[in-house]
Length: 244
Image (cartoon, rainbow, N blue to C red; front, side, top):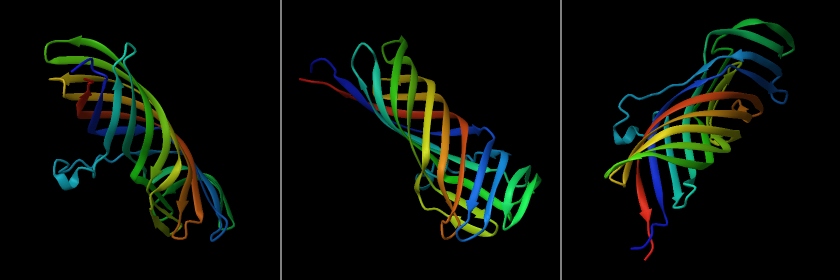
Protein backbone atom coordinates (compact mmCIF):
# COMPACT_ATOMS: atom_id res chain seq x y z
CA UNK A 1 0.00 0.00 0.00
CA UNK A 2 1.39 3.40 -0.96
CA UNK A 3 0.78 6.86 0.31
CA UNK A 4 -2.70 7.42 1.74
CA UNK A 5 -4.85 9.53 -0.58
CA UNK A 6 -7.35 10.63 2.06
CA UNK A 7 -10.18 9.27 4.16
CA UNK A 8 -13.93 9.17 4.16
CA UNK A 9 -15.72 9.60 7.47
CA UNK A 10 -19.21 9.30 8.91
CA UNK A 11 -20.51 10.88 12.12
CA UNK A 12 -23.67 10.53 14.14
CA UNK A 13 -24.69 12.42 17.26
CA UNK A 14 -27.18 14.61 19.07
CA UNK A 15 -27.54 18.29 19.86
CA UNK A 16 -29.02 21.07 21.95
CA UNK A 17 -29.73 24.51 20.56
CA UNK A 18 -30.72 28.04 21.48
CA UNK A 19 -32.53 30.59 19.30
CA UNK A 20 -32.69 34.35 19.03
CA UNK A 21 -36.05 36.12 19.05
CA UNK A 22 -37.56 36.60 15.60
CA UNK A 23 -40.15 38.68 13.79
CA UNK A 24 -42.69 36.33 12.18
CA UNK A 25 -45.04 37.46 9.41
CA UNK A 26 -48.28 35.52 8.80
CA UNK A 27 -50.31 36.13 5.66
CA UNK A 28 -53.30 34.58 3.86
CA UNK A 29 -55.44 36.75 1.61
CA UNK A 30 -56.69 33.92 -0.59
CA UNK A 31 -58.73 31.49 1.52
CA UNK A 32 -58.70 33.57 4.72
CA UNK A 33 -58.16 37.22 5.57
CA UNK A 34 -55.17 37.91 7.79
CA UNK A 35 -51.88 39.73 7.49
CA UNK A 36 -50.13 40.23 10.82
CA UNK A 37 -46.70 40.11 12.44
CA UNK A 38 -45.33 38.79 15.73
CA UNK A 39 -42.50 40.99 16.98
CA UNK A 40 -39.71 39.44 19.09
CA UNK A 41 -41.18 35.94 19.30
CA UNK A 42 -39.31 33.59 21.62
CA UNK A 43 -38.61 29.99 20.65
CA UNK A 44 -36.99 26.91 22.19
CA UNK A 45 -35.77 23.45 21.25
CA UNK A 46 -37.01 19.99 22.32
CA UNK A 47 -34.29 17.33 22.89
CA UNK A 48 -36.63 14.28 23.10
CA UNK A 49 -33.77 12.13 24.44
CA UNK A 50 -35.97 9.62 26.28
CA UNK A 51 -34.97 6.09 25.21
CA UNK A 52 -32.83 7.49 22.37
CA UNK A 53 -30.52 4.47 22.63
CA UNK A 54 -33.22 2.14 21.29
CA UNK A 55 -32.73 1.44 17.59
CA UNK A 56 -36.33 2.47 16.78
CA UNK A 57 -35.82 5.83 18.51
CA UNK A 58 -32.47 6.89 17.02
CA UNK A 59 -33.97 9.67 14.86
CA UNK A 60 -36.57 10.89 17.38
CA UNK A 61 -34.22 13.31 19.22
CA UNK A 62 -32.43 16.29 17.72
CA UNK A 63 -29.65 14.55 15.79
CA UNK A 64 -26.76 15.28 13.45
CA UNK A 65 -25.42 13.15 10.58
CA UNK A 66 -22.37 13.92 8.45
CA UNK A 67 -20.62 12.24 5.53
CA UNK A 68 -17.30 13.73 4.49
CA UNK A 69 -13.90 13.31 2.92
CA UNK A 70 -10.53 14.63 4.09
CA UNK A 71 -7.92 15.18 1.39
CA UNK A 72 -4.45 13.98 2.34
CA UNK A 73 -2.60 17.21 1.61
CA UNK A 74 -0.66 19.89 3.46
CA UNK A 75 -3.75 22.10 3.81
CA UNK A 76 -5.68 19.44 5.80
CA UNK A 77 -8.97 20.35 4.10
CA UNK A 78 -12.13 18.33 3.67
CA UNK A 79 -15.62 18.56 2.25
CA UNK A 80 -18.74 17.38 4.02
CA UNK A 81 -22.46 16.82 3.49
CA UNK A 82 -24.32 17.45 6.75
CA UNK A 83 -27.89 16.94 7.92
CA UNK A 84 -28.71 18.72 11.19
CA UNK A 85 -32.11 17.82 12.62
CA UNK A 86 -33.02 20.61 15.04
CA UNK A 87 -36.40 21.42 16.56
CA UNK A 88 -37.79 24.95 16.73
CA UNK A 89 -40.92 25.74 18.75
CA UNK A 90 -42.41 29.19 19.18
CA UNK A 91 -43.17 29.28 22.89
CA UNK A 92 -46.90 29.08 23.57
CA UNK A 93 -48.68 31.51 25.90
CA UNK A 94 -46.10 34.27 25.64
CA UNK A 95 -46.89 37.97 25.46
CA UNK A 96 -45.55 39.67 22.33
CA UNK A 97 -46.43 42.64 20.17
CA UNK A 98 -48.85 41.75 17.38
CA UNK A 99 -49.26 44.18 14.48
CA UNK A 100 -51.46 44.02 11.37
CA UNK A 101 -55.00 42.96 10.54
CA UNK A 102 -56.98 39.81 11.34
CA UNK A 103 -60.16 39.26 9.33
CA UNK A 104 -60.73 42.97 8.89
CA UNK A 105 -59.82 43.99 12.44
CA UNK A 106 -56.68 46.04 13.00
CA UNK A 107 -54.35 45.04 15.83
CA UNK A 108 -51.28 46.82 17.21
CA UNK A 109 -50.70 45.84 20.82
CA UNK A 110 -49.00 43.46 23.22
CA UNK A 111 -51.00 40.23 23.12
CA UNK A 112 -51.03 36.89 24.94
CA UNK A 113 -50.54 34.42 22.08
CA UNK A 114 -52.23 31.13 22.94
CA UNK A 115 -52.26 27.96 20.77
CA UNK A 116 -55.90 28.76 19.91
CA UNK A 117 -54.64 31.92 18.20
CA UNK A 118 -51.35 30.71 16.65
CA UNK A 119 -49.06 27.77 17.24
CA UNK A 120 -45.94 27.27 15.12
CA UNK A 121 -43.24 24.61 15.34
CA UNK A 122 -40.59 23.24 13.01
CA UNK A 123 -40.11 19.98 14.89
CA UNK A 124 -39.73 17.32 12.23
CA UNK A 125 -37.85 19.50 12.04
CA UNK A 126 -35.83 22.67 11.62
CA UNK A 127 -33.55 20.76 9.24
CA UNK A 128 -30.26 22.17 7.93
CA UNK A 129 -29.00 20.37 4.79
CA UNK A 130 -25.56 21.83 4.08
CA UNK A 131 -22.35 21.42 2.12
CA UNK A 132 -19.41 22.37 4.36
CA UNK A 133 -15.76 23.16 3.77
CA UNK A 134 -13.79 21.64 6.65
CA UNK A 135 -10.38 22.69 7.97
CA UNK A 136 -8.47 20.41 10.36
CA UNK A 137 -5.56 21.50 12.56
CA UNK A 138 -3.72 18.68 14.32
CA UNK A 139 -2.94 19.61 17.94
CA UNK A 140 -1.45 16.50 19.54
CA UNK A 141 -0.86 12.84 18.76
CA UNK A 142 0.42 9.62 20.28
CA UNK A 143 0.66 6.07 19.00
CA UNK A 144 -3.11 5.45 19.03
CA UNK A 145 -4.66 8.89 19.60
CA UNK A 146 -4.80 12.16 17.71
CA UNK A 147 -6.45 15.40 18.87
CA UNK A 148 -7.44 17.96 16.21
CA UNK A 149 -9.28 21.26 16.05
CA UNK A 150 -11.95 21.54 13.35
CA UNK A 151 -13.45 24.59 11.66
CA UNK A 152 -16.34 24.49 9.18
CA UNK A 153 -18.23 26.93 6.98
CA UNK A 154 -21.18 26.00 4.78
CA UNK A 155 -24.74 26.49 3.70
CA UNK A 156 -27.71 24.98 1.91
CA UNK A 157 -31.50 24.60 1.94
CA UNK A 158 -33.92 24.23 4.82
CA UNK A 159 -35.81 20.99 4.14
CA UNK A 160 -38.28 21.23 6.99
CA UNK A 161 -41.58 19.94 8.28
CA UNK A 162 -43.83 22.42 10.07
CA UNK A 163 -46.79 21.87 12.36
CA UNK A 164 -48.98 24.95 12.72
CA UNK A 165 -52.38 26.27 13.73
CA UNK A 166 -53.48 29.76 12.71
CA UNK A 167 -56.93 30.99 13.78
CA UNK A 168 -58.11 27.40 14.21
CA UNK A 169 -56.82 26.21 10.81
CA UNK A 170 -54.29 23.45 11.42
CA UNK A 171 -51.67 21.98 9.13
CA UNK A 172 -49.01 19.30 9.54
CA UNK A 173 -46.23 18.86 7.00
CA UNK A 174 -45.23 17.86 4.46
CA UNK A 175 -41.44 18.02 4.10
CA UNK A 176 -40.51 20.65 1.56
CA UNK A 177 -38.12 23.50 0.81
CA UNK A 178 -38.60 26.33 3.33
CA UNK A 179 -35.62 28.62 2.73
CA UNK A 180 -31.86 28.73 3.22
CA UNK A 181 -29.32 28.36 6.02
CA UNK A 182 -25.67 29.32 6.44
CA UNK A 183 -23.43 28.27 9.32
CA UNK A 184 -19.94 28.30 10.82
CA UNK A 185 -18.66 25.96 13.51
CA UNK A 186 -15.61 25.06 15.57
CA UNK A 187 -14.87 21.93 17.54
CA UNK A 188 -12.50 19.22 18.70
CA UNK A 189 -12.01 15.71 17.31
CA UNK A 190 -10.23 12.84 19.05
CA UNK A 191 -9.23 10.01 16.71
CA UNK A 192 -8.86 6.61 18.38
CA UNK A 193 -6.89 3.77 16.76
CA UNK A 194 -7.16 5.58 13.39
CA UNK A 195 -10.63 4.26 12.56
CA UNK A 196 -12.84 5.73 15.29
CA UNK A 197 -13.35 9.16 16.81
CA UNK A 198 -15.43 11.29 19.14
CA UNK A 199 -16.16 14.91 18.38
CA UNK A 200 -17.80 18.04 19.77
CA UNK A 201 -18.87 21.10 17.76
CA UNK A 202 -20.31 24.51 18.54
CA UNK A 203 -22.21 25.84 15.52
CA UNK A 204 -23.73 29.24 14.85
CA UNK A 205 -26.27 29.45 12.01
CA UNK A 206 -28.57 31.89 10.26
CA UNK A 207 -31.84 30.39 9.03
CA UNK A 208 -34.17 32.28 6.67
CA UNK A 209 -37.66 30.78 6.33
CA UNK A 210 -39.35 32.20 3.22
CA UNK A 211 -41.70 29.39 2.20
CA UNK A 212 -43.49 27.99 5.27
CA UNK A 213 -46.99 27.04 4.14
CA UNK A 214 -49.93 27.28 6.54
CA UNK A 215 -53.42 25.81 6.72
CA UNK A 216 -54.92 22.60 5.40
CA UNK A 217 -55.01 24.16 1.91
CA UNK A 218 -51.45 25.56 2.32
CA UNK A 219 -52.59 28.98 1.14
CA UNK A 220 -51.18 30.75 4.18
CA UNK A 221 -47.53 31.76 4.43
CA UNK A 222 -45.19 32.41 7.36
CA UNK A 223 -41.81 34.09 6.91
CA UNK A 224 -39.10 34.78 9.46
CA UNK A 225 -35.40 34.48 10.10
CA UNK A 226 -33.38 33.80 13.23
CA UNK A 227 -29.97 32.80 14.52
CA UNK A 228 -29.29 29.52 16.28
CA UNK A 229 -26.48 28.27 18.46
CA UNK A 230 -26.07 24.50 18.42
CA UNK A 231 -23.93 22.26 20.60
CA UNK A 232 -23.21 18.83 19.10
CA UNK A 233 -21.73 15.67 20.64
CA UNK A 234 -20.86 13.01 18.07
CA UNK A 235 -19.05 9.79 17.39
CA UNK A 236 -17.87 8.39 14.06
CA UNK A 237 -15.52 6.26 12.06
CA UNK A 238 -12.88 6.85 9.39
CA UNK A 239 -12.35 4.85 6.19
CA UNK A 240 -8.78 5.54 4.99
CA UNK A 241 -8.28 5.39 1.22
CA UNK A 242 -4.88 4.31 -0.04
CA UNK A 243 -3.30 3.51 -3.40
CA UNK A 244 -1.21 0.60 -4.59
